Image 1 (tube, rainbow, N blue to C red):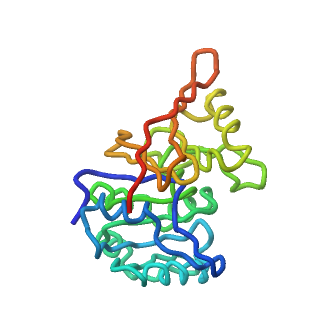
Image 2: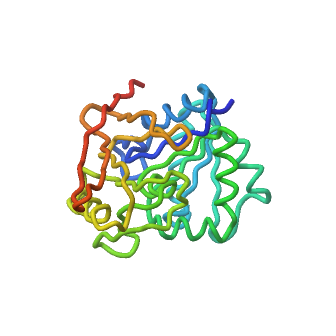
Image 3: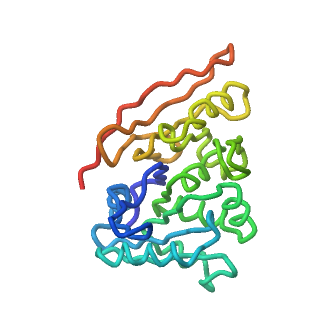
Length: 245
């Protein structure tokens, strides 16, 4: 099964954490929603991409452990130190959901381009595979956003895949630098108008149109950010639907 039309779920939401340490994870409402968007049901095929953190074995293992408690069928594509699939295109095109985890969006996009994933992922998107992700895995589909890829002080990133012709602000309510940096980058023309998400919220794009904002709990919101002629930025909270899973 595939999505009804090309679909991207760009979020600041991800796994739910348990009480037994950093790697005690369960799929969050956002993952269940991704399977729903793909019309794939309880046995949806998820492929996880962890290139934004260099394909660490601990996170890959934690992902499999989290999904082992569900009916979903998990796999992963790694590129460090080499691809783990002989035919990357075939593997990605047979998925229902491709989910990209967070880390360095600058490194993520650079490594993808080296391995030809930009073209493969675009083909998967057009074929109805739901593309989703959190943080770097949200910014990557857009023109760019604010990032700590270059150090602890946020900087602008404008070398995303650009299929969604907007800027994207993640962790909007969770990190002090995020909101003012997005206003600065849009206000000075570094980035185009766009959208932002609080931690727990996600943006649903049908084609390149923002169709809906969702959240995994009460409180998180999505926002539209638009530059005025004088360089000021208007921030408009968007209606946000709380997911019930």
